[in-house]
Amino acid sequence: MNPIVISHSDDLDGIAAGAMVRMRYGVPLDRIFYTDYTKERRDDVARQIRKLDLKDADLFVLDLNPDPDGTFLGIIDAVKKNGGRVFWLDHHPWSKAAIRKIASRCDVAVVGENRKFCATEIAIRHFGLKGRFIRKLARTVHYSDFNITPRGKEYRKLVKAYALGISYYNMICSPETGTKKLRLLASQLAEGRLVSRELASAARKFEKVNSRRVGKMLADLHLVGETIAVGFSRGVQATMACGEIIRKSNRDIAFCISTEKGKASMRSVKSDITGLAVSFGGGGHPHAAGFEVDTKRYNLATKKGRRRLIRQIEENAGRLGLLGGAMGQAGRKQPKNS
Image 1: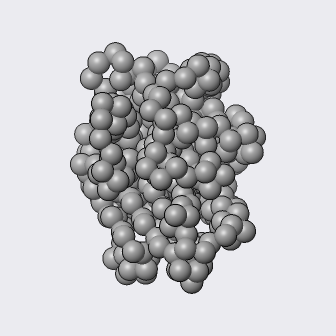
Image 2 (image 1 turned 135 degrees about the horizontal axis):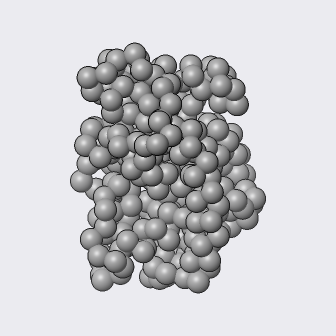
Image 3 (image 1 turned 60 degrees about the vertical axis):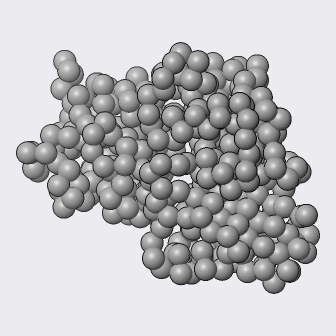
């Protein structure tokens, strides 16, 4: 067998899903590739994979939507041309066009919106993995990926440690070091270990950075309608930052927009925000979603660019009935005494 893995780099679900392939098939670490949704990162992964021996390769793509510019389509065609197979396991919403264009080329495609199982859980079922560790891992990832408050202190600690540790590897480490750390984390999980000193250390380091950045973001929130609050920041842990935005503003929907990466992360308490993410070309789950910001259209380095994005958020949310009873309030600042 000649396995290759491409999975999502930004959260525990992507890391763990890749680890499940390693657990099942013993994939070498240098054949596990983690990527986000940026074109630059995907193109880099594509270049690295094309340098590999693709003869009779089994390509596993996990926890990722198809990219609009066809980067992964080229990889799929290269693998198939060399006699290989492609397995795509995902749980995000897919368009009918993507299913026809991408999934139809795969040997196995478990794709499309799944509100019950995350990608790691789909991989576990697909590979027939069982045991106490697998059950504990699946529960931890499920809590994390669907933005569900964990039951029990142990799971709360695990979810927090992975969220902060993975953020440290992605946002603080150099790209080369970060990739190495993510691969080692996958190896740890594939060996049946949920905790490590290194992950705990990374989590503690990023928690300090995260706290400072979130505090600065909360001092300059923007309210949209009666339900939405928007914050801009350098790289922060999205779920935690959105939680703080909701707490500070007493709103149902939080946008945490990274001015560094051009990524918008969304979380909600009650509302289904999937459609709102899709309206910006993104996707996700009912209470945890996001999208890549078109930074050419919305220059996040300027107040004008941010205001323009906020107005678009108001317009899209209004069409979807997510503004509550207030209209035309985009960009109103959060009162200082709130």
